[in-house]
Length: 336
Image (cartoon, rainbow, N blue to C red; front, side):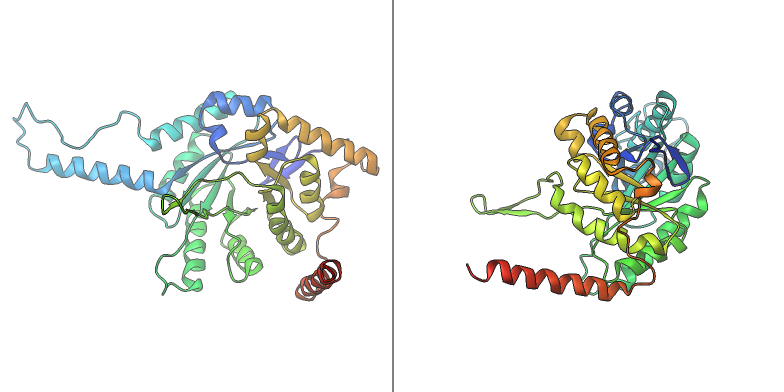
């Protein structure tokens, strides 16, 4: 049975990839993910704020030294100095992980503007990253910021980074654009080799006892896989870019659903946190069992079977599905 997969131009043994998350914060963690069967590993995200804080610290050190006499022997900078900055530690993790395992290591950058991304992206590629995933988390606080401005910033980041590095660049997209499909295609035109659908945004809850908000980040559930699969199915026949499904993976059934929709790879962290890093093998084994039961011998026979054909009117298809679902719900629950 052939489960080989190409993602971002990389040859993978199978389509199940460990997504960015807490399990890949150390070389030991990366090795465990590889031993557990992951065909590629996306490292935890380095945040733009970490890079900016280090730039500010460096500037503070430089300013502190500007007016110091050359003869001053007792000078000591007041800014904190760390021997291993977040950037240094991340580059080291990329380099050591790439040498430690035989599967591709994908670096992940999380931010909302250009900042120091371009230069750091070059350093990540030089350190051994097989690809770079841009996790663009932008939630405008200014109510006067238009959707066009948000899209433009995304395109600027993708264009700048993809032009600066020789390795492929993917974008972990938000599901909240007014026209997800159009933005996806624009990101590809701007230089993205792949799209990860979707990024999960923090949705704070309200604690009615403490009268405060609760910002706990919860693991994804299978229900959350419906939205990314819908858009993967819609995009599959409209782009040659790699498509990764993310969120809502709990069992091999969820992996199969993503592949039928048209995903090249399926990413998960939540399932590996819940069941252990070796759970990847169970997901792959379940996929194989399903393929045997259905008579498939290659993923090429499976991938995109349920993708929306280009000859169809996608809007009409989705509208028709929506109307049918509402009518079915009315018939099912109306008599209660």
